[in-house]
Length: 390
Image (cartoon, rainbow, N blue to C red; front, side):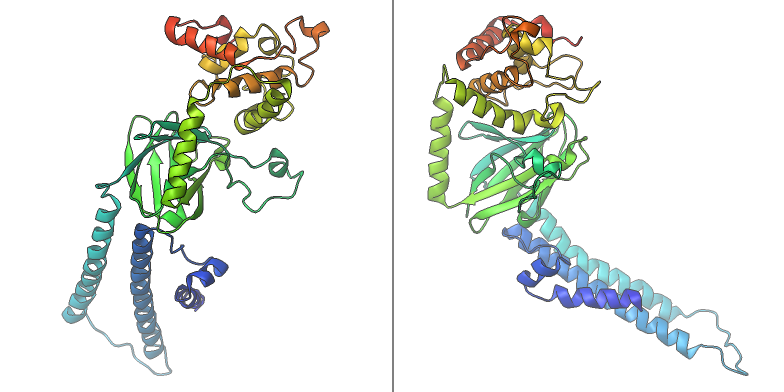
């Protein structure tokens, strides 16, 4: 009876409006794309078939229990099967399977039909962020969790979109078919946005495909659903759907921003921008205090590689550290971002104490220094020896 009651309650709410479903959260979302609507309709179609099967089975079960209950003086009837019943319980399930198979195959075919897409975007999973590359427009950027660490540590009230907010969302136009290509740089990830009706695995060395056609502007949120490491829960997905005009304006702004070359920045800008870059990219591993997570993740506070000559930390961010979890940020951060975050690190947690760490301690790093180091690395293969693990 308890099982039947739960099924009937679910069936009641399943028939309510999408607003009611959002309130009760007992069903999957209807979504805002063509495929999400088809997936939802298929889900409800199969659900009601299952409900009908449950109802029939339990009615027959209760009838059998009641009709064949033990009574005083009763004698059990002896029988040895029925060909008719055996044909029925074979034919009916087969018919139901075929009934569910036809619409399922149709939906699966539509899900994987990536033809006629007008925009192609490559999605790369990286611990623990997403890299988006607009193949036709040459735009590349990274999307990082932007929830403040104070909220994660329980030191501040949690925001409305706690752990579901990023610094740079994936931006797409409405009423356009967008093809997404999924892969990974390290471990397996999974890109999932329920309202878009899409979930695809990101596997190193392999390309998965999917498509979206969003019908109305809005912001839609999801997350990585693969256990991709200790920061797995801090890898959200945010998709922002814009009108065609707003999307074109965004494209223009992105293209113009990528052509801008910054050589020097004032101290205040370096440190404020550096703190934001550190929060988005470094804080999860190295902590807000710069103490890291020894022994796996070294501390930045008091590190000789940080407080010494500038060419060492610049080379580390461009090349990573061999044999460690420290990855290269050459593609993830601009020269201005690298200069800013290194300036912030070199002036924080006492790293600017020249008496303790020498004359190079606390010296700021400008974007032009990073640009020169990047050029030397790309053209001459120049890599500082401190990029090797100690």
